[in-house]
Length: 423
Image 1: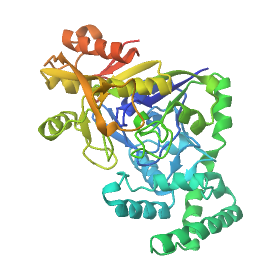
Image 2: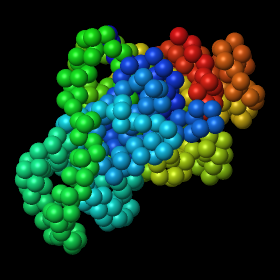
Image 3: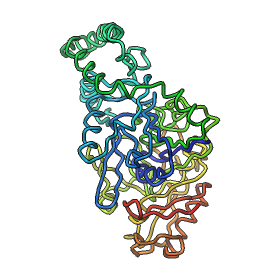
Image 4: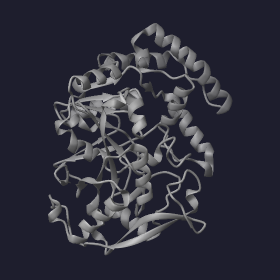
């Protein structure tokens, strides 16, 4: 059986969780393949709203197994808080969650260093959430990280922590003038965490490839979006992992041969949080107006999101990198407030049109716009393409034409049922 990947095409916050929830009804296994608790995925079912940070959105379906893959960095405190919160709401996620033995753990010292480094950056700050994600990924690459499987043998864990703290305490004291981390309390806390989750820890690469061979249906879920990819995004204002199709393969340990469909999620406009270039950004009253209509505030941090018009070049960049087979267009209903809707169809730098989304000089970009008429009609009750106003359908057709990717799903509201499935 083939696997299906859902990936963000912009700077994250595209509404992946709602689309994933919609697609999960007939899925056997859903896999989170990168990122950490800095991501926030919001799902609304009836009058209930759920915000997920580490656990895949598919946990709301009783028959779905949720895998947190080796590409994720997992904060034990955040994870347990999320699991316990779900149990209080009647969802026993412990019964249906599997943790990769190869994923890396975010330690308290990672949070301390993250916050301190960002505070020292001044005008050069990146805009991290301060949750230690990037520092944990850096330690992974430096080979001084702690993996989930290390918890299973107490001797291995203690030896590994001694080695890690030898390096990290030198960094804390000499570079940042901060206190050393004591071994004993950290070791004890990790053993308590181990005692609660050791039954969930598995070789998830083996598990996923075997289950796919056995005919199971797998959906892969990432955090953030393509423009935040560490290699393909707006560096250095990016996240610390590969958010794209390549990251899905390495972060799940699944063979690329199983991946047959890649759905890109994009808003009918664009948002971004934190620092960094944003070619189609709206400022002042215009930006506030779209932020208010779209209720654009971070699910994890509450930070106001920057807003802008749909950027064709950005989505075409995502289509090339990810091999998109189709698009899911979200928050289409938010644009119902506008008389006219601009679309960015290309870029100019220093008066010359450029061919593609660039790796540098994004702050110099001048967007090229065309303007389409709005529809000024509530579309939240529409459940088929024919029920949408003519101007709305024209907007959808134009996005398909410009991006070169067919649109398979439209979201016309936050609820699970406020969805139009096209193909």
